[in-house]
Length: 173
Image 1 (tube, helix red, strand yellow):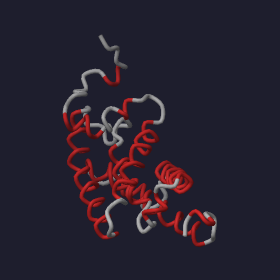
Image 2 (cartoon, rainbow, N blue to C red):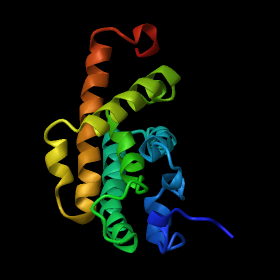
Image 3 (spheres, one colour):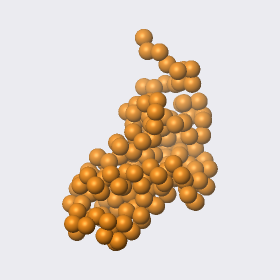
C-alpha cells in the first residue's frame, strides 16, 4: 500500500486529466517537479522540430498548449481546486517547444542548445517577469499554462540574442 503525504490524500491520481497534467506522474516527484516537467518537454521540442516547416511547428505547439488549458483546469479541480498545484507540470512540458521557435532543426538536437534553452526557461518560469506573473492570475487552466508561455517566449528571445552575439560559435550555424 502506498503511503501518501497528507496534502495528496484523496487525489484521484489515475484520472486521465491528472495523469496528463502531472506528466505521467512526474509532477509527484517531491523536489522541483517543474524542473522534471521541463525536462520532459525537451524530447517534445526535438520531436516537433522534425516537422519541416516552422509554421507547422508553431501550429502543433499551439494545439498542444491550447489542449493543456482544459486538461489543467480539470486536473486542478480534481486535485482539490487549488489555483496551480505544484504537481501539475503539463505547462512546463507543453511550453518547452516555444523556447526553440525558429531555431534550425539541426541545432535543436545539440545538447548545449537544449541545456541553455532549458535553463533559460526555468529561470523565467521561476522569476516570472511581467507579464508572466499577471498571466498566472488568469482563471483556471489558462492561468496555469499562460505564465509558462510567457517564460518560454522570454527564453526564446534570449536564446536568439545569445546566438546573435556568437555565444554558440560553430554549434549554431
